[in-house]
Image (cartoon, rainbow, N blue to C red; front, top):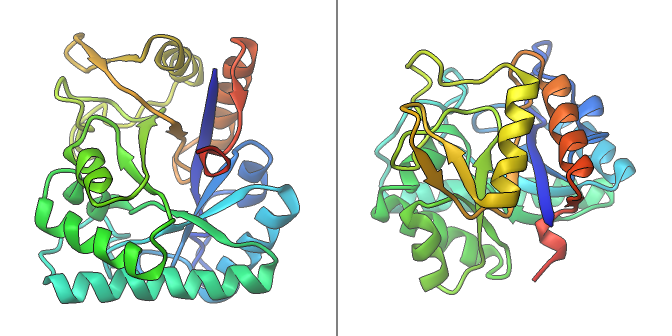
Length: 254
C-alpha cells in the first residue's frame, strides 16, 4: 500500500500566524503551499519552501480565489479569463520562489471554495485546467475523490490525483460536509487515523449518515490550520505505517 499525506502550508500573513509548518513538514510527504491569494505573504511562503526543501517534502501550488479576507472559503463567480489568469499568476509566483528555495512546483491543488466549486462546476474547472496546462501540461491536478473533476481533468490529458480528507466529514454523495454544518471537521486523532487506514485498505469511508462511500484516493489531506493539526497528522502517519502502508509523494509515481 502506497499513499501520500499532504497538508496546506505557507499560510502565514505578516504578523498573523497559521499552523506550525516546521512540525507538519516532519510528518507529510507533500506540502500544498499558499500562493498569496487566500493566505501567505512572499517572505513566509519562501521560508516554508526552504523548510520543505530541507525536509525533502514535495511542493505543490495551493491556488485559490482572490479572497484574503475570507481565507479563500467564499465562492466566486469569476469569468474564464479572470480565473485562468489568476491561476497562471499564482503558479508562476510560487515557481519563482520555489526555484530560489532550491525546489520546484510538482503539482497543483486548488484551495477552499475554488476546490469545492470545480469539483462540480465544469466551466470553472475547465478554466483551471486550461491555466495549469498553459503553464506546464505535466503538472498533476489534485482533485476531490469521486468528483466529476477527476474525469474532466483526465479527459483534458492531465494526470488527476484523487484526494481524501482525513479530518473532514463526508456526505453520502462523496462530497465534503459544508464547514457551515456541525461536525464538518473531525477532531479525534484516533478516529481519524482509523478511518484513513480503512480507506487505504478497503477504499471506503463512512458518511455522516452512517452509509459507506467508496473512494479511490492517492493522497490524504490533513489540514494544517485545524486545532491539534500536528497531533492529528502524526496519528494518521503512525497508524498508516503500522498498517503496512508506504508513505511517499504521488508526484514521484506515474
